[in-house]
Image (cartoon, rainbow, N blue to C red; front, side, top):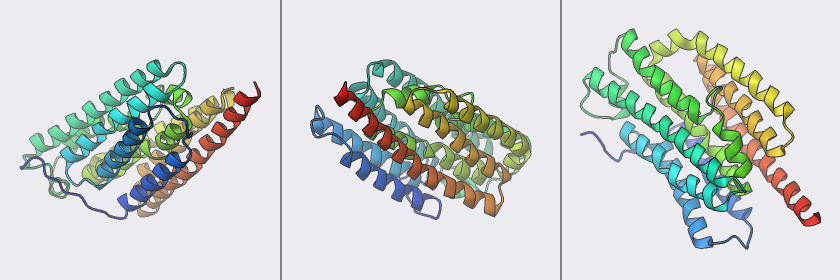
Amino acid sequence: MGLNYHLALDGLSFPLVFLNSLLTLIAIASTEEKTPRPRFYYALIFLLCGSVAGAFLAQNLLLFFLFYELELVPLYLLIAIWGGKRRGYAAMKFLLYTALSGILLLTAFLGLVWLGGATSFDYNQLRQLPLPLETQILLLLPLLVGLFIKIPIFPFHTWLPDAHVEASTPVSVLLAGILLKLGTYGLLRFGVGLFLEAWAYLAPWLAILAAISALYGASCAIAQQDMKKVVAYSSIAHMSYILLAASASTPLSLNAAVLQMIAHGLISPLLFLLVGIVYQKLAREM
């Protein structure tokens, strides 16, 4: 059977599901009372929360892909309707980039089942497939590019600053705090979990890319004059640390990667909340 509704909670998904619920409450609490079209707005917030939680809990690759793509719809609308002056451009850019990310993930998942001769997309079954190293590398590369877009890693990062600048503060909280973690979660769950030999083979190159991306993100953050862009580019650097830790693929480094995911999921939303307060006070004084 190709698709089954199989959900499970483990040590990797539990802190992310908890973080998703916490940030959803914070986003709702930080929303202005006079937000236009409130029923539609809160429905999208809850749809976003449910789809992200489903992606973290999914134990079927097709089910993960469906939840991974489902979250694009509410987030696109939240940026396009309640965003800033260039919200249409930012929302469309986000949609195109992340849709391409989903296509690459689906390509890797379909290739894994086809080349591995599996009978289903069940995660635990696919982990047992004896794939040669060349096949693993062939499947891991599109998976990595798709997840690098989502994280994002340099040079696939250009959608993130625009999305953060145009998104409202509650949406930026969700985008930075939990949506980016879908990419790093995919690295640990599918990159390391399904293609361990290929991951070890490509690890030196992944570490180099992570270092370049971290330095690039930090350098761009220093050069920004918009406070939201400062936080957005710093997120690129912080998320690159997770790739750097995951490239080592030792028990200690993988635990450190999860810890960094949770730490960034708390710090970055707090920074966006503070920036939102500053913007509100400046708008009242002007």
